[in-house]
Length: 319
Image (cartoon, rainbow, N blue to C red; front, side):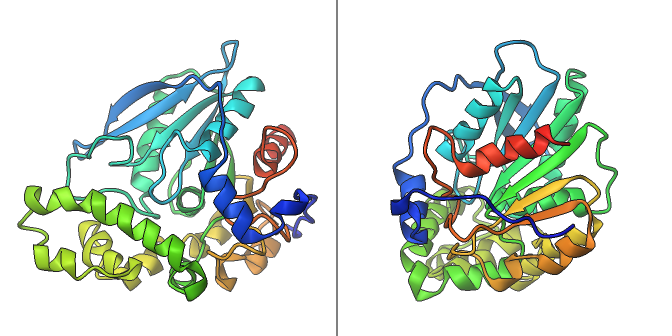
């Protein structure tokens, strides 16, 4: 599929990748989304909390919304999308990954960029409701990588899955980690690391046979966290093995569901490998849009909704 020429034109003050990223993460507010929580039990006995919001009239369409690293279903980048889709007759299921709904999950493992088994459980649950003829998936950052990996893996994707939209997708996890560890992103990396370590701390006592205090204290960077916890807790050899196997880049050629990737060229979290130009050109189902501006999940424009949210709706409507 030819590369899509972006029509995104930011407000003058939002051209800076830093400004748009920070504003969108810390200052954006979305009101008027009424979410109803549902808890589902996973095959390994753990749980996921799903926060549903509904269209005004009964709908046969649903969008699954996936958050980013240390996010949750109340983040404005999910509630903004939920509100827009609800207003346009589509129910929204905002997923809280394991341990992200305000309550610790039950097992030592939690969530990661490639945990498509949990997304599969959500899809299977929604299909089992026998209510929706069309299901879409929209992932943000970590959730974007997960969504692309899900539809690109060797699995039979439900026929109800009609489209995927991936925003600020770190398709190359090692490259993205390298960018996060660079000096320009130090403040972001430290913030992520602090959240991750706070969430890991209670597991020290609960699972003392799996992680020691010394292990915990050795975590100084995000890659340390992935070496010590993410990889070991989820069946990988080390952080590099995790990045290699969980990156969606290798799965993009196999995608058979119409998929839109929107990655801003001034996104400081993304490496060159996160812009899959070759893969998009060789796969008619993969649409790649690379706006000049937007930062990381910061596609600010005039009005209540962000550019990426409007584009997601437009992409679905044109299928």
